[in-house]
Amino acid sequence: MIKSLKARKSELAKVAKQIEILSDIDNQPRFGDKLRNIGLFPLKPTSIEILQINLGYMCNQTCEHCHVDAGPDRKEIMSKQTMQYCLDAIDKSTIKTVDLTGGAPEMNPNFVWFVEQLSNRNIHIIVRSNLTILVANKKYNTYPQFFKKHKVEVIASLPCYTKENTDKQRGDGVFEASLRALKILNEVGYGREGSGLKLNLVFHPGGTSIASAQEVLERDYKTNLKNDFDIEFNSLYTITNLPISRFLDYLLVVGKYQEYMTKLVEAFNPAAAKNVMCRNTISVGWDGGLYDCDFNQMLQMKVEKKSPQHIKNFDEKQLENRSIVLNNHCYGCTAGEGSSCQGSLT
Image (cartoon, rainbow, N blue to C red; front, side, top):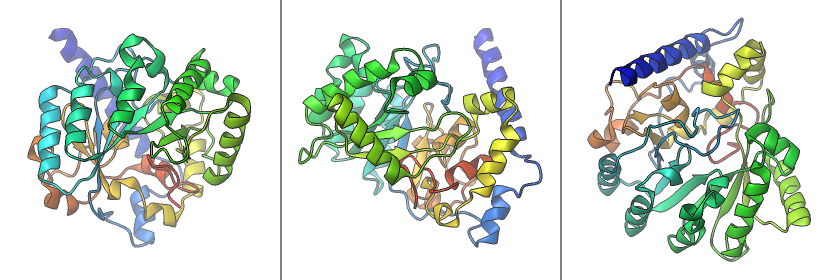
């Protein structure tokens, strides 16, 4: 218990330091002021269409860009009781899409039960998979067929269609393991025309780049993966790396934080700002806490205080009337074509 308390205090101190850093960007307008200039402040929800649920920070990988700071040593896992609170919230709301994320959401011990419960409610289910977990061991080898049974949409991380770039960002052997998983998903029908089984890939830029044009990059991915490996998928989502958690640590170590923030600010797109995902999504933390987005969750910035703070107290009307909590990391979602968990916003 003492060790756990010390770890918690250390985590809170790190988060507080990151928020302090994000609140100060040299010679640049604060994100809230930027929104005020285009008539979007305070930023308000348009509706609550998606419940994005983080099932835990445990992961079989340790990626350098990971905003969750996920890895094999993380012990934060959503309990079955909290999952039931999520189901109760869905039952009394108009939400029709649930987006399961992590870490590796498949590693939650109640993952199968939860997906079955959602499926019984005729909810559209999205699972964000790192792919390698599906070929990690026999326990997960059956998941592609399980996904098919429940018509789960799979959104899978693949930083590049080349081995060199993928392994550089995610670790040695990740590219080959990802290809094996993609082939298995294709074999059961995912990504195949007319199957109705959606397989979408996610591109994260390396280093301090902003995501490339999504449409152009998607064509490159489809051509190269089909020609080189006979792999098919539906859509590519480009997601800009937000300056939080492990990626913020990286920016500070290499001395490029201010440079990266300037790049994001200068690429601010008002059209993207109107469509940011926090306007139609609520993020649920592994412990049931409520956040405007998965990124705010990592900074432990809960929804504004007058709104319900935990999923067991979910109130759709109150949450639809809240003001969204902002900081300068939000520039990452509005740079260029914009960036969300469903890719480009423009």
